[in-house]
Image (cartoon, rainbow, N blue to C red):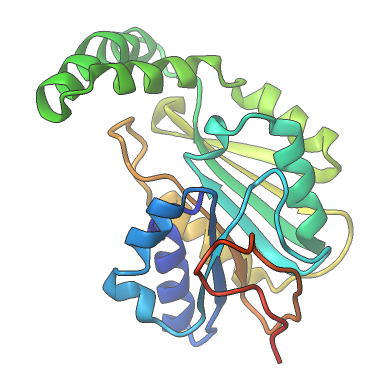
Length: 239
């Protein structure tokens, strides 16, 4: 769910500011989202690659990526197990999987207020502003159906990731999960850059564009190809 590139652009900008340029691939199954993203000024930055593909079947070479991020998007996938298996497949040993997603509120008192806002206030706002209250009701319902922080962490571990942990944000309205693929070494600065970007993202269900990116903070050779109908940059081996 790379969407229009919001998080990918932030990762690329932060890495460049630190003198560590990143090769960042923005992957999404939605052609229209990508079409909008490539027109944004940030898309002209060096190292940004666009790829139309499915998170359950990524056209990316095995063990080729340093980090994989997905924010406010994995909740909308059909088969969580397949998405996590693909994330594990494309990451190098020591690579990092970082996921930011709406979760279960754990702060006393905030849970009831959040439910009131999510199921009563938000749909009415959506109807008044966007003329589509149903979409905002779906947002609230999809959050409730998604596994809790602990349950999701177990699913990530079941996919093969090690040292799985999560951190609640805004009292549990969202949670950031962070894990590593087996044993290996990826530059700590790469993981810190991605985590810093995800930590600054909004944590309220306001319809923010979800973003899923595969980032390569170092020079990496990759292969594969997107679906033939996509006009976006093909996935080519990098020299």
